[in-house]
Length: 305
Image 1 (cartoon, rainbow, N blue to C red):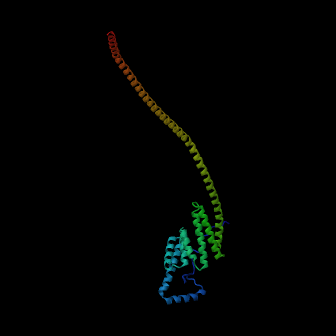
Image 2 (image 1 turned 60 degrees about the vertical axis):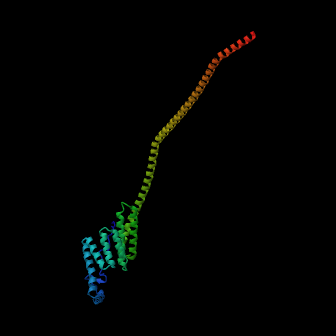
Image 3 (image 1 turned 90 degrees about the vertical axis):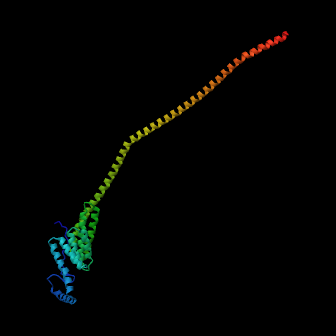
């Protein structure tokens, strides 16, 4: 027969004593003498003290009735009301935790059960620790589909609280049963977590390979573009160089033409000077011949004389 996860234990608390006052009608003969002495002492202290003690007990009973009707909101409201008049009651902390648990507020339930576990009553402490284990287990289940690692951590905490409860009350079967069930479930979760981590690792490796492949493909696509850009750059550079060389050659030819023009002008000026000199020589030659004729005539006159 398959074992089932067991619910909270001892909820609501049906203890015979609450803050030292008997709140149930059934009283054992053994306790009657103590009860008489206790009530007498309270009467000495005054009616107000009795009213204060009975008030929270009555409220707790009302809370218990709401709890049994599954009206957990009303039960929690009444337990909190009772706690306001008896803030140090571990039993009320326990009952508050049970109502919070039933409402699905497991985190708050853990806090209430932890307060309840700080009691000298080892039986109540064992129950509170057991219920903390249950609350941790429920918290873990809520995170199983979103954060498996945190679920595993909460399950381990749950097992620890079950173990502490068993150590305090070895005769109680519920913590042992839940410890066994959660331990098996934890083992399955660890296997699942291991597979998940391997899958994530594999997926991460595949993603890395995919990224590298995509990067290589992009590089291959970019390579022709880069080569084209490089070719265009070289072509542009060559064109610029050719234009520069053409400009330099044009400038050089212009300078050569300028030099040639200057040399032609000098040659022309020289030729003009030569021609001018020749013309001047031609103009001076008849005068010289005329002078020579006159000289010859004068010489012949002199000879004749």
